[in-house]
View: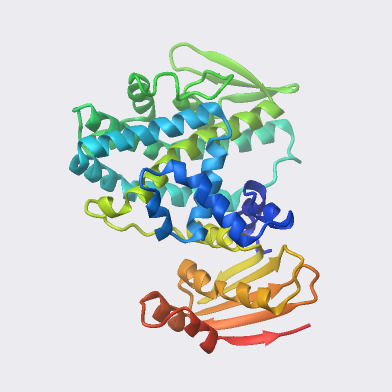
Length: 388
């Protein structure tokens, strides 16, 4: 497994049930149907689901299942989605323009998020003081670099709905504390922007992280926050991890609501929103989830010098050549994710007895992407090599 993409690859198995479903004996069709059934209630226009590939839908299936796993995060997700829908229904042009204005900032924030994912390290071996430092470094970056943009966009949409729109520049210049305060002052978000058990505001969690106002004291970490009035909260190692996971879940609720809203209203929003380029890490994660939705685990992934390579291992017990050929079809998806000059997919059966390598040129993938050739064209121009 390559170091640069190792955390992206591990994330698919750790946070998605797709591979485990194949290992339990479910078929690709059964899994696809389960994904569609789960997402259909999330859409006002469920027919839109038929316009998206299973690779993209499987990612959002995982995200929705995650945020709905807790009542409080599900409430945040539903609130965000309802406000977006109400605003778009009542003031389509204004809401669409606001959504479009924030796309660039959201894209930049997601790039920071994926950089943090790539650099994440195992923390279980760290002493408490270093463990706390790493936890707050990660959560501080998540809140400041990525979540804050979603909060500002939601404040802008909320104010637009209430007839007090404001401008992008005005809202973008607000500090995090002001954004949290204004959202908390609305009936919709009142008391929602805190994580269970620890009633510390989002901006104070960020402040603890930014100023490293923490100190290990025996088995606990003492965190200090507040400018005028100082407050202290003590957290154990296990509680620190729960705080980090809860803050990530809160972020996921905002992000997933935005994504589902855009997928549900893509055609209407296209009038107001310029297409944005998704980061390579985001596209590679979608590639990995897409492979998992067909029962293949990506165990190695390299993108370097114009060449993209992925090794896929079959998690099913099937030893037929047809599964190997199915896996090699992911050359096209890997090109979509990387735009590499040369694409190579290596398939390994679960037992290791069946192996097949497929190589195709990026220019041939581009012909399919532009509609000049159909997908079967790649089977004719690919170079296959079967090896023991």
